[in-house]
Amino acid sequence: MRYFLFILGIMLQINIPLQAAPRVNITELDHIVAIVNDDVITASELDKRIKLLKKQMGDKASTLPSDEILRRQLLERLVIEQLQLQLAKRSGIRIDDEHLNSVISNIAHDNKLSLDQFREVLAKDGVSFAEFREQIRDELIITQLRRAKVDSTITVSEQEVDNQLSRSGDKQDQEFHLLDILVAVPEGAAAEAIDKAQAKANALLQKLRHGEDFAQLAMTSSDSAQALQGGDLGWLKQGQIPNLFADAVATLQPGQLAGPLRSASGFHIIKLLDKRLPQSHHVVEQTLARHILVKTDQVTTDSVARERLERVRTRILAGEDFAQLARATSADTASGTDGGNLSWVSPGAMVPEFEEVMNKLKPGEISEPFQTRFGWHIVQVMSRRNFDDTKEYLRNQARQLLLQRKTAEETEIWLRRLRAEAYVEIRLGQ
Image (cartoon, rainbow, N blue to C red):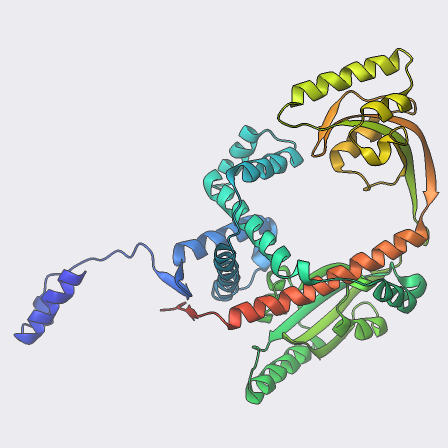
């Protein structure tokens, strides 16, 4: 290419007619569509993301906006991802191959496939396993980064939980299905830019009031992360709804609109699709269980721990007392002194591997040795009961909903700040 330009310059200097120059056919293989600090995003990367989205949408792909709008929205997603990966790299966040392999194996297992079968399914869908693997690595890195930069800074006090319960009363569990359109306003924007964004939001609201489809308008005009999902925020419990929306949503009936509502991110228009109130009582099946734990170390390997527990189990089945053996052999000091007693266990209180084994046992049965991240166990189920834990359940729900709400709000602010402080040059159409 440089040689061609050099020859062209010589021809211009000696007045050789351009039409006399030899014809050169140039095939462009790829080009840059965005510069993100010191990195770039190429057209091929963007095209792959578009193809993947259309494949995931399946029959609904026809509802997506035009390719021009789709490229703009997906490019912005790639920019945000790139910024987070850059920050993660500077922060020393890494995902090693062992952890990555474990996560991918779990994904295959959740889909009831072996790893080889999972590879075949990806190949049939035209997805490279190597690319899929690196995409999962990036997602894990971003998740770890957000935990460090956002999640770790968020706390919920008992007073906040009390206030939330007081505000929501017996409607704490009420759920709302919401749609959202966001007209973004950059951080530190001038008054003129804010007025322009508000005018756009008002114009969109008028279109909606005149019958335009909310989901289609969100796909083509919204700046939110849910734009390509038609602005669908899904079902949100009352405590999950951002404070900005809470009062407005409380007065809406299904099908009604509210907005524009100003937030730190811009102007929102929301629509209530539906609302529901789940059952007023929360009853769970609790399990009364006890266990014996053997931890592994350089001396006590997995095989040694398993064999030790197999011998203990045999002794119990032969008539020796479980509680006495737990006091003598269990590495769980908290329960060991109480004969291995775990008291009444509610669903979700134990790690998944432990709960899965425990739930398969009938009262009186003792499990075979099994492994969790804490070591090797045997567990005995003593009894089961139905327990109304509505009060504690609602309190835990309120705490989790406040945590989720705070996390969502802070993440959005953090991402917009990350974007504003970066050097980003968009080259679509160039």
